[in-house]
Every structure is written in C-alpha cells, then in structure tokens.
Amino acid sequence: MTSHIPNTPPPGWSRAQVRSATRAVYTAFIGNGFLFASWAARIPQVRDGLRVSPGALGLILLSIAVGSTIATPLSGLVITWLGDSRTVAVMSLTAAAGMATVAVGYTYGIPPVVAGLFLFGFSSGTWDVAMNVQGAAVEQALGRAIMSRFHAGWSIGTVAGAGAGAAMVALGVPVTAHLLVAALLVAATVPIAARRFLPHARAPAHDGTVPAGTVPAGTVHAGTVPAGTVPAGTVHADTVHRDRPAARRSPLRAWTEPRTLVIGVFVLCMAFTEGTSNDWLSLAVIGGYHTAAALGTLTFAVFLAAMTTGRWFGPAFIDRYGRVRMLRVCAATALGGLLLIEAGRVLPAALAGAALLGLGTSLGFPVGISAAADDPRYAPGRVSTAASIGYLAFLAGPPSIGFLADHVGVLRGLSVAGALLIVAFILCPVTAPISPSGQGSDNS
Image 1 (tube, rainbow, N blue to C red):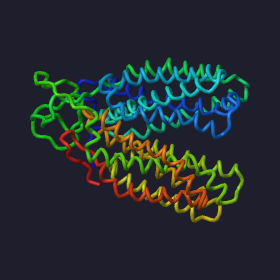
Image 2: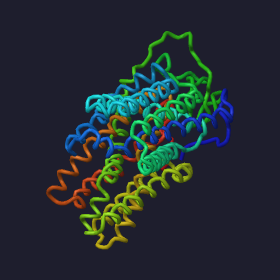
Image 3: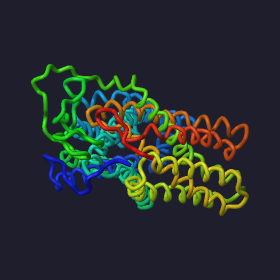
Image 4: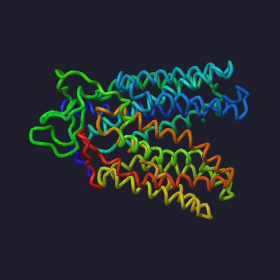
C-alpha cells in the first residue's frame, strides 16, 4: 500500500491552494462533459437540418473521433510547452469555438459542421489529457486517491448537459441559440478555473538519479527516503539544480517505455469494456432478452449509475487496499457482470449484471491514467501515450462489436469484452505506484 500523509499540505502549497486546484479540476471535467452532452442532445435536430441519411451522419460524427485521435498523441508536447493550466484554458476556448462553428454553420451545410466537430474533437482530446495530468498532480498533492471522482464529475457534466438539452428541445429553443450559450458558458468558466491549477511540473534538466537531499520540482516521493530528504508522500515546490545544463526529455520518449505502453494496453482493455457497454448494452438486452426498448434503456441507466457510483466512492477503497488489489477486484467484478448479462434468462439478471459491470469498469480508465502520471516530471508524455492507446478502444469498439453482432447477435458479441477483461486482470500489477526513481510502492 502506498505511503500517504493525509491532510498535510505540501511545502510551497497551502491547503487552500490545493483545495482551490481540486475545485478547478472538477470544473474542467464537468465543463468538458457538459459541452459534449450539449452537442449530443441536439444531434437529431442537426441531422434534420442537414437532411442527411444515418450513414452520412455517422461519417460526419466521425470527424470528432478523427480530431481527438490526432490530438491525443501530440498532447504531451503541447502540455510540456504550455503547461496543463494554459493548455486547458486554450483548448477549452478552442472547443467552444468549434461548437459555436457547428451552432452557426449547420444551417449552411455539411462542411462547417465537419470543420467545427473536428476542431471540437481535436481541442477536447488535448484538453482531456491536460486535465488528467493536473488531476494526477492534485491527487499526489492531496496524498490520497481522487482521480476517479474527477471522472465522475465528467459524468455529472454529461447528465447536466443532456438534461439541459432535453429542456431546450422541449421548449423549442433553436439549436444555434442552445449550442452558442453552452459554448459561451464553458468559455467563461473553464479558462478562469484553470488559473487555479497547481504549477506545472516540468521534466528535470538531467535524466540521472536525484542527489540525496533534493527532489525535482513538483515530484512526489512515495517510498522510503534517506535521512535529510523530503518526507515520503510530500511534494517539493522548489526548483533545484538550475545550474546544470538543460537536456530536456521529449514527451515522445514515453512511447519507448514498457511500463507506460503496458498501462496503455490496460487502459485500452477497460475502455473497450466501458465504451462497448455505452454503445451496445441497451441493444444487447433488447435483442437478447426480447424485451421492450424502455427496459433496455433502463438496463443502460443502471450501468451508468453504477459506474458513476463506483467512481465517486472508489477512491476510499483505493487508499485502503491499494491500486492493484482494487483494480483486480474491478476487473473480476466487471467480468462477472458481463457473464451474468450473457448467461441470464430474465431481465433482473441483466439489471444485476449491468450494476456489476458498471461498478467493475468504473475505476479502470481513471486509475490507469493516475498510474501513468505517477512521476509528475514525465506525466504529460506518459498520460498522452497511455490515453492514445486507450482511446483506440473507442474507435475499434463499435465496428468490432457490430461485425460480431452480424454473425452471433449483439448479446454474444459483447463476449470480446470479457476476453479483454481477463487481459486487464493479468496486467493490473503494472499500475503499482512508483516513486520518481521508478521503484514500485504498492504491496498489493
């Protein structure tokens, strides 16, 4: 289990600063989810305005994924250059501009919508990585797990955005007015909140070992330390060794690190399960259980509620039992839920399976990102790499399940997620916390 000093502010940062940064990260996550859901809520009206077929709409929506896929591998370079605070501020404004382009442009045809969605996807992808890097920094400053709660905040933002969207549709508010207001709201709140982020931890001027008695700026030392060094679990906010020759490490080097790449595969396995459940669970229950559409939607709602609950309450269990142990429990729980859904013959079994599946998938993605960011010096590159690998699941998931569904049905097609959950269970030990020296510190 990791070493913590709860409720002890790190040197150079007061409790008030850390609390303020925590609220700022919540704002960034909620804003990101709110803007995405605001758009998603108006897709039917945009489709009607463009007068396109479902196939054409799918290609238009793909522009978001293309923008995000291009941005995520590059986000480490952007964050290293700008810092996570400025990156979130700039990219949230850019995402708002992209959404405003969609809001105004959809009445003029497809090209403005594609351009706006691509811009939104590109900026949202970089924004996502940057707020996760800052979330990891806040988590380390607090000395306790909290990353999954930030992801629960994203879910809260999507609920708020979808709810507001439903209200706008019911009231007959035009798409242009609704999306412009949503974009302005995000542009007015997220950049201001980002100013309260903790300082960006940059890579050290050398790649060698750290001399006794010093810790590079912003790093967390989680293990046992020699006499005279910074205490375990604290953060040193001062800059050291500025007189040494600068030899900055490129964030792209994270693509050569076995631990980072394996964490990325772990994140991919968990994200695939989460993403396919989002896309296909309701259809699987409707078709596989021969039940009404409303009950299939109810099963999906149970999954989402369980996942949000797991992300909110999970950190306390991580602090108590350690990352590896909890992730193993989560992978096993998700697999049990999936098997229950596939083997069940009555709707209560599907509902219970959906609850287990939601709880089991809740911690995989956020805790995997935390593991990639264990050493704040290299967090931008490592989080960018792990997220890039993980996000492949959201591109590969829908078509792969769709292909299987054509042959064995949607319910049986979900079995591929079960195979990946077994892989995730095996890979859990790679997420064990490390100190900046690279030594693991999780006894799970």
